[in-house]
Image 1 (spheres, rainbow, N blue to C red):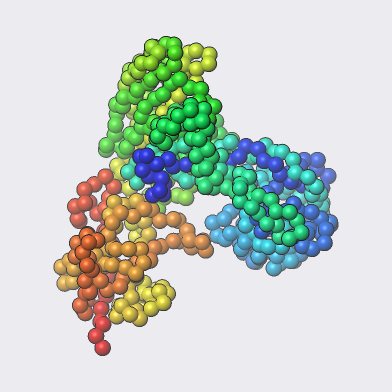
Image 2 (tube, rainbow, N blue to C red):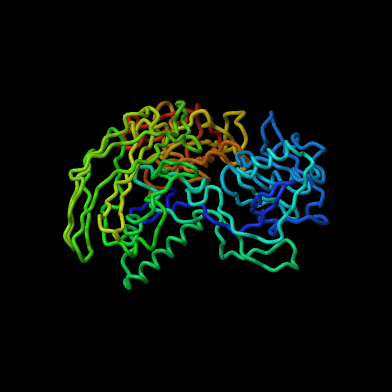
Length: 567
């Protein structure tokens, strides 16, 4: 799901694409003549070379670390054998357990002279640790390196002196780190994509060696794609010598974006991943056609918008004939096994909607607009109980040679969105916090709100319009908790992240301070509950429902506690 700041209809939510080309240093291994590019960690911050410590020794060999016969992620000290001492370790770029600094620390402690991390696709930006040569290599380079190592395990490295230009693995495709949409109400997000992976930034980077010159860091993130989109807006205004409102420019940029595929895939990437596609400023400036609206939300099966009207405007100087077509995109399945928390990376499925046009071609005079009715049918394949998100693009292609095709993305969900699980009940529980807000498992049921405070650990697999933490006494409702952290015990909440920075399942801690709101109204002053026994319940409103409790809420009772504040 998209974060709050990108949710508004007038806000543009940016997706990221990996840079297609990079100026990188490289290495050769053994007798091989293939240059393998690498991206050094920011803490090392310079090309890797053979030499005195902390550089890699001239005779260093490759030592892959394995677990169960497969390349390990480098997060377990037991996987580092004595063979790594003075040599270069190869590990797998799985960051679900520990970060690059954690595995670099383990490798250095084991005596390794350097470390290479095989990326899942392309090149990762690694933080690493100061004074330790560390770099990311492409997945294909990692496979080639392993094959060469098996053939000649004592081969050594040759590090390049200069950087050269490389076509990067997975470049020109959606970045792996870029978030999937949609928003909590099935509106199409993100809106548009721009280059954001492995970008030469304006962020000054100070090398580890103070004698070397300062350069600029290569960074990745939607925080790199967003200024690219802002610059695209500026270029459009400059070219048109006008200053249209941001959402007007956004529509042009979305209409003319390049519809793209995932890396090494022949199918188009989901709209929930790339939005309308990769921004193309030249096409935006030269187009003489627009389609509105700039996105189509088909919603879920229960609220399915079967028929949608689009408007195609020809603002060119001559009449134009347009051919209408449908480009389907990947479907995304996040709930394949009745799991209540969505997969971190959805399963891509070949399930496509069908679109029937009221006219396959339309001739539009200069300055005029034509309306076309689109009749949608949900994908035949795909289980509604797994809530797959399907998507695609409706394209209007001018017949004139210089005409620029324009498109509008659509998204939909097969199934009933109100049945999507919200509460991860296996990981919601009562805990206790002390006066320093240290949280520990509950081992008693008596609280005084000073030295011992009840703490409700919640975990949401999906957005809810209203998350309530209700307090009752003798079966009668008392109020919604007020908390030391995370605000009042009511109101809309977004999905929680999957894992915390330590790789553990994330839960949000709501520490009850003994106060309650008698209504869902922040203008009220919360009241202190008297001593006694209280029952606590977590309730989450289902999507696309009215706030009728308990009818439209998922509920979980956490048991009874005793409050005793009097001495």
